[in-house]
Length: 339
Ligand SMILES: O=c1ccn([C@H]2C[C@H](O)[C@@H](COP(=O)(O)O)O2)c(=O)[nH]1
Image 1: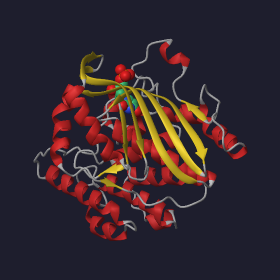
Image 2: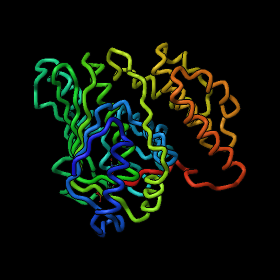
Image 3: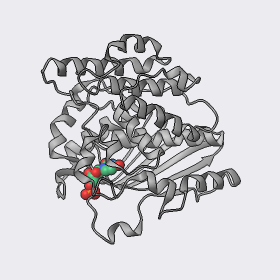
């Protein structure tokens, strides 16, 4: 199956319709599913990476996952705040298949991110800029969780950086929005680092599937009528990878309840807004979380107004939760990735 669209929603809507109508029934190790083998899609504007839909817009949990990758972590401790489902697959507090350590230190030492950067700096037309996530050892001994993504490849053509992602297995409902967010962010970070324009995002999954437990929600999305993707602003030029340390420090402060000012962390409005998203997440994470009362002011501080709807949505969810009521989409940004 081949799909092409400007942003993630154009892909999800067609993919979900096809899975619903034509997906073959398969009993997976994680439950019954409808599945299509060999799904390929191309996103022509990789910045259109966040769904506006109530259920599929995942900027907070996906951002947490991106930081986890960038920092090279495999610890449940960090990621469970953003994606609690990881707890089911952790072994002794770590995720065997975590991408971060493999990106930065495959087999304990190979820094694939730096290697592909050096390769593309030296030889722009290269077809070798591959970050391997799946390792031959992954099926050698049993692990609860191994990488679903086999490889990430970067290709520069006519001054634009394209990214190709291959997955052995992809949960179309819970996994896909996170995967597209994280990988297109890595693509844009890489484009900034290399000083080239952003190209297309290509994605291939051998098994694209939806579990029975997500079927109703997937159908709601199909009928929701809000499948308009939010385009993030362009990333500023320069190499953003060294900013990881500052982002992680800010995240740690927010997590421990310390109030911070995003402008003091980053002068640049793009990255300051990313810190503000983390502020919104932590200010709405728990009842009585510090910062909740400041959300109005924070809303005004967002440089890019695309993020304001997400702040409002999280605030609403928090208020409803505090009032003890439940709504669909309540956990729209916390418990939503299956591993
Ligand atoms: O980045 C990821 C990681 C995992 N999964 C999903 C795919 C599968 O539904 C499940 C892993 O189960 P196995 O394929 O390992 O059985 O997690 C994704 O969609 N994306």
